[in-house]
Image (cartoon, rainbow, N blue to C red):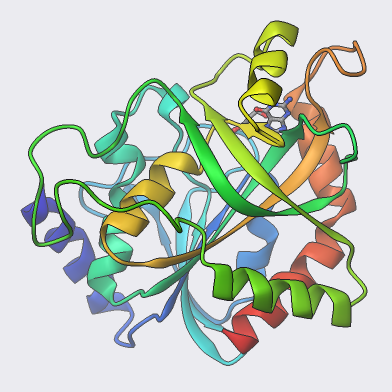
Length: 270
Ligand SMILES: Nc1nc2ncn(CCNC(CO)CO)c2c(=O)[nH]1
């Protein structure tokens, strides 16, 4: 696998000869941030050796490198999900590539459903921690010490320092943020009401189908992580109404401007 990661990284380095310091993973409907990247070099995933391709609406499917708020960044405009049928090593492959490109800090964003009834659609939740309920782990199998240890510490998967900075920025921009625990299911089904009750009992505040695998791999490789969930609906059983992907995309559209100004300022001050 290391050779494949190196091959993808070398291909990208040929097209972008600067070193990106910040990685951005943009969730459903949040890819619009990548359009703000200046002097952008856009590489469709299909052109990058060994890269999978996105298959989900709201996930463009290209890597965008350039400058955002004066920093060199690499953004995934569209991510890969376990529910698409990719093995975890492919879902997280881009994070390994970002590490080899030189990324040391990463902002992972997602659309999520609220389990915490004090959260409402449109809220931005700073992720304090996650619960891996995907049923697997991207680090299962032989460990590559070139990335990290066999048994990585996860006591601060989401950087306290970056979160404190993000909270400062949110208040200066008068953006109301929440904080909470993200519980990652495998998907593609939305959760049942019983699964929501389980998520709540376990201490989850929001649920989704991504982020956990990427963050595990980022932390394994020593990348500092800030996680931001865009709450796009109340989880199943709370409002007793069916959920849809269309609703998810609609809500991210509504919060686009505050999300953009928030993340751009965070990147500037990172
Ligand atoms: N209740 C609930 N609301 C949500 N809003 C976004 N997502 C993340 C999943 N996003 C999928 C389908 O929209 C696309 O990756 C979820 C979720 O998993 N559950």
